[in-house]
Image (cartoon, rainbow, N blue to C red):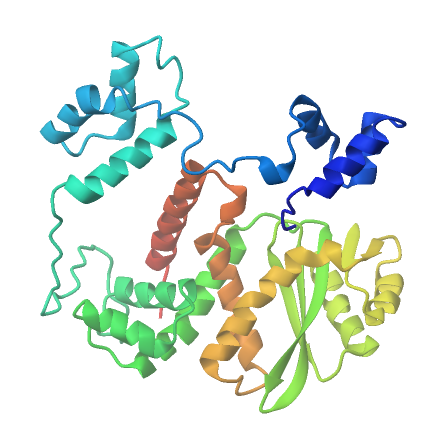
Length: 367
């Protein structure tokens, strides 16, 4: 919400009401908080006559020590980190810097000084692409002229960064691997299923709390509804395509899920009425929660569908979206960990584990 400055009229109204009412009531009638009222009680100067603070309002804690203590160290070694300089200050002046409260200020000062006075950086633009160097003992796939690591890299780049086959072709060409976009398309279609099956095999047992939702997609210029289900861990559990959001199609989709994974404990949907009868019939003991705000977890999973729809231009056939998403969603479970739920160190560990898993699945590839 935008900040609205307090006016002189509000202050006069507050002072008048304060004679007959409590501080809280007078502040509420004037239209500001009780904390602002206490500030006006300490200093009743009207807002129009107050001086507006410009620039720094707090004294610079590094003003005394920057020229004498820190600048000589940076000139001697410009690669020194702000943490190292802070520890130096704490050892030399323990009373002035008892804690790490000025760390961010010091990091900002060091960054500014390094940008203006630090050593120049060399930028090299390679004119001729170097061949992609791959040191491996893995046997080559029969019938494929390229090592399996290049094929796995193409599949990884295609799904991880939502690229087109032409984009992956350019990415490989920059690394000295000349391959056509048609070959990349065949690699993605053939080996994407392999990586998806390996990930699905190693995933834990499905959670008994499901989210169901539908999204409208265009196939050959006609509207179709793509049903999707995920569990509480974010794992995609199934897809189904229908020509209309009717009760029969949702019942058929839910029936497949229940037959494969068992009856759920909780089912969360939006307020589409097509969900009510199938859930009552096929999972009578399940707790059905129909609320738009509770279903945000599955709403996020529609993003790759929309992104790929823009890249493809449109889906070419009825099998096209399900064929792509069934492998793409499984692959992105390990390649795209949920960054907002992880600390930086945990996020790096998740990436490292994903790369190790991808290498293991590459070794399992077969023609």
